[in-house]
Image (cartoon, rainbow, N blue to C red; front, side, top):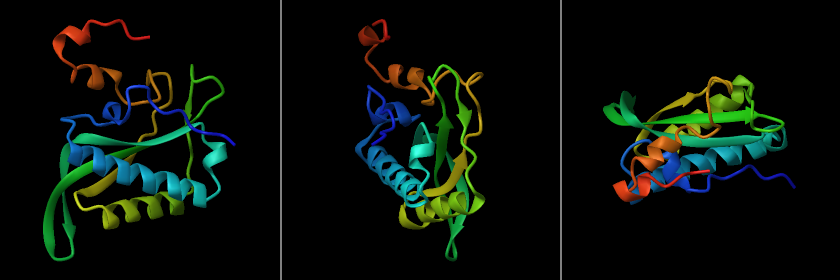
Length: 147
């Protein structure tokens, strides 16, 4: 059984903004839907790593008859042999449509889903930003050398 790598620092590295219990819960829900749909489509074994990232921006949308101003989730999926290089995974459009629809309909607080199509390089990590995580640490811990 193949398992995608999980970041050592935990989910906080995938929240590009203030890390709160509510933000972690939003991300956990989005990530669970994303991985569930990937597995249901039989794609999990073809993808080296897939995850959701909670972005520090809000988007205007419409839910029912109401205007919303909610959070944005970015999805990333890559294929790689060694993680020194990686190419973004080409999903069938109907899979991305179903993932996006589920996330925006089932998770209150998220109204926009994007898909990252950046290869590595130039993207330097499979995760979005280690520096985002480090910047949230107390200053004396920011000087620790991270491997």
